Image (cartoon, rainbow, N blue to C red):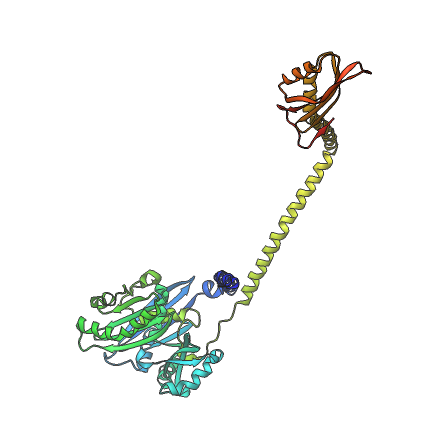
Length: 508
């Protein structure tokens, strides 16, 4: 492996981490700047959900304020058990709630049965990513029995894989929906959203449990339905009926449907949640059979406020209400025909927040500068006040520096000449009065002594040998008589010991 490869292998994880964190920070800042305060908190949102179910009609009226969802009124109207309610029966149910629905609602949503919806998965080339609505419309009559003119539809992008765009479509008959929509419009109720029951359940589960990867099973006697969602997008839907109402038969029928889901889960390796609801669903022991913990969809009273007792509220109706009270785009709306209008950014609020941030930044920059300028002026004022004292201190400091230099000079002289003075003092103490020296030369640890003696030079040599600082004392040359001086001249060499001698120093 080359040096460049080693460097790249070490830098790539760090660079990826830095890039991902930068993107997260950017997304967080973008969400803050585009957070619509008025939509989320300050303005109450009211809505009514009409849920069409086999054998009944459910009407739920509620509102959202300060992110709190409240169910104001719930009514369930029965019809014949084995059929869906007719449009005129929907009108009768709405008229029966005229008092509760007075001045209500701002939004109206209809939840239609899953049996009325064609759910299809399609793969498109990645090149149509920027123009998915037109691609879905163009392929609609090929993928479903309905043409775009005869259908209401919506889609969700499930993801990208192998250069293909995975799209989940929900399609229903336009004529069927128009029958209900028209009779309600004649009564002054303008329907804004039509959504499948599976989408309503998905919205409710995501709100209640905050789980985006899950399997949901609903049981009603011999009938059962369910869906499998990955990353918040339904990827598998099933409806079924067991041959009998006993738990064993129903459980086996459901397991047969969810076996393909279990294989998908095993391949993805993602954590999954198993959520159930309906008649005696826990008696089936489905969670134990598939080795996934089972959760019952009963946490609604903890997160949704009810003005009256919440008894037998269909989860489809409750999910439809929650979806209609959330921001546009959180729930499937078949009336949009694949046209997803991005919510407008609250530029006024964003501008105000941006100006506030700029003002805070400027204040944080200017305030410390002003404080430092004030401190600097105060220091200058004190310096002017103490100028005379500072001058005296400077004069004393200069005198101190001069004295320090003189002391250092004396110390250096003493240290450099200490050996010479000590040695000369030693010679003075041992040389007799009949002798005197004419020259002393010291080189490293050798000493060369020249002088004259009126007595015997051998006596002098003996005394020098007794010195504690000299060793190997000897005559460097024979002594001779100097008639002019009337004395014997001698030259003695010796080794110095017991004194520190500076390397390479030669003194004379």
